[in-house]
Picture 1 (tube, rainbow, N blue to C red):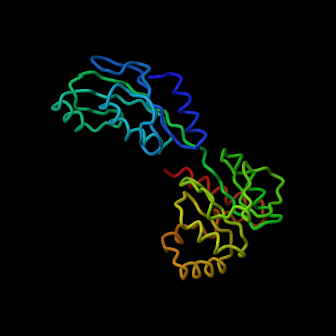
Picture 2: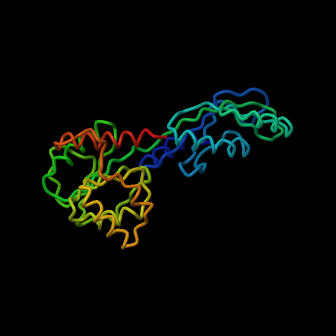
Picture 3: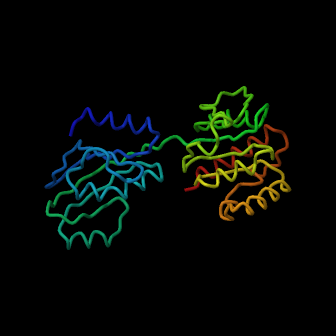
Amino acid sequence: MNNWEFPQVISDLVKKEESFVVATVVRVSGSSLGKPGFKEVISGKGEVVYGTLGGACPDSAIVDKAKEVLRTGNAMTVKVFLEEAKDTLVGMAQNKDDEIHVETNCGGIMDIYLEPYKRNERLVLVGQGGRDEIEDNLVSLGKSIGMTVVVIDPNPMLNSKPDLIVDSVNSPLSEFDFHDDDFVVVLTKGTRDLQVLESISRHRMKYVGLLASKKRIKTDFDALETRGVSKEFLSSIHAPIGIDIGAITPSEISVSIISEVVSCRRKE
């Protein structure tokens, strides 16, 4: 393996905002092609994009565990047993989370450390333009909990500085690259609710919330259903948005919204 290639692969994945797992052999006992220090990079799609742990057997066996640590965000050390078929069946029957039993003639045991690198979750605020205190508050609150904040707005008037501003006039929402782990808050005040929600419905996201009255929500949802937007998507929208804390002021409403975002973010 080319050691100089490893940091380049990592850098490319980070630039593309792709999640990945680095698997490293930390200990070996018995016979194994893999040695301590061998590394492998596994993409969020479960593809090995760099390196090897010592051959096809451990490489393919570790992919499912890599997906698991990427989902939870928790690193773990997995013990991989390279053993004969009869021993593999016995080991698999024990069903331990931190063990993998692979049928091969090597006979060794490998300890492999799996370290997840998840792209930063984004709080995407879709505004209507002009001064909006809730939008402004959500920018600072989103950044305070470690999220990347994106504002999609034709004319944002903000005191807080988001990580990215997208002009929805020159860059239509339909062309925005949504991520499946995005948290989207719609603050279009009725003017563009239908257009925005219909566009968002074409994507899968972790959270979609709409700031609106119960009357407007019903009107919007009825209209969206006639446009062919699925009931499944409509039922997934958090509307009315935010946790019920009796919020009245824009600052309180912002806190209730970000509290709901945190609640959904931490549900695994």
